[in-house]
Structure formats: structure tokens, C-alpha cells
Amino acid sequence: MSAAEPKPNDRLVAVTLDEASIGRSTADKEHERQIAIYDLLEENCFSLPGHDAGPYALKIALQDAKLALEVGDETGAPLVAHILSLTPFRGLLKDYFFICESYYAAIRTAMPGQIEAIDMGRRAIHNEAADLLIERLKGKLDFDKDTARRIFTLVAALHWKG
View 1 (cartoon, rainbow, N blue to C red):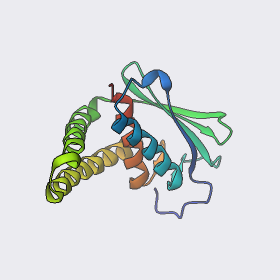
View 2: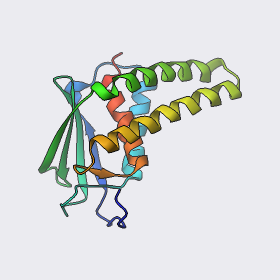
View 3: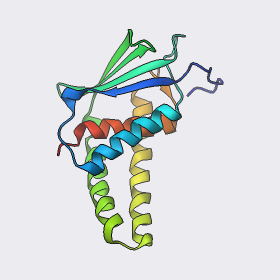
């Protein structure tokens, strides 16, 4: 977010993932999707530069192997859509999936120190992806790093094919 204090309506009140973009998934990954949406709605800071239309609804989809972020007002009426190439995110997504698989395996059998080390790596990838998302959408969408992290989780969720 910009240095200005966010307004009370600078937030998301609805987030949906395009059903056509989501493949079958494991219970762990489906649970992660649900938690990410819940967490995003519980705490976020989100606005459209130059607009005062909040609160907002966000639909996240894949269109022709690109990321589509469709922003609407709280009733769902469309305001703006942004299409991003996923190419800059490919390596991060690959690393994220690898470390998530390691994490899910570790929580069942590993020692707490091993789980913590894997989770630190997962958080580092999340932070890097959040920074990239903020950079790629600068001047188009405005959100803080925690919101960007949660949005990245949902972007990754669209790629989780069971």
C-alpha cells in the first residue's frame, strides 16, 4: 500500500477462484485454498489507485496460461481486469510446490526443527512472490505485503492439479 493511511473501504469482501481454472486436488491443497481465502478476507488492505469504489470483490482465474485478476465492487459489478504473464512467477511456483510437498510430508513424520526449517523456506518463497506481485501490479492494484502473500497462495492454488 502507499504511504497514505488506508481508508476503511480499502479492502476485499469477496474472493473467488475461477472454477474452470481449478483442477482436482488433494485434501491438503483444498484445505490450503479455503484457509487462504478465509485469511485474505479476514485481514487485507486492497484498493484501486484512482478509484474510490471499495470495498472490492476479486476473482482470480487463469486465461490462456496467464493470470487474470478481475476486480469488482462489493456487489460484483466489474471495475477493472488485469492480465499478467505468469512467466516471471514460473520458477517461484515450481519452488513453492516442491517445498509444499516437502512440508506436507514432514508434518506427518519429521522432527519439529525439520518442519520449522522447511516452513522458513516456504515463507521466503512466499515473500519473494509477494514482492513480485506488488511490483508487477504497481499503479494498477494497491495492496500490502500480507495481502500479496495471500493472493499468491491463491494464484498457486490455481496451478494445483491433483
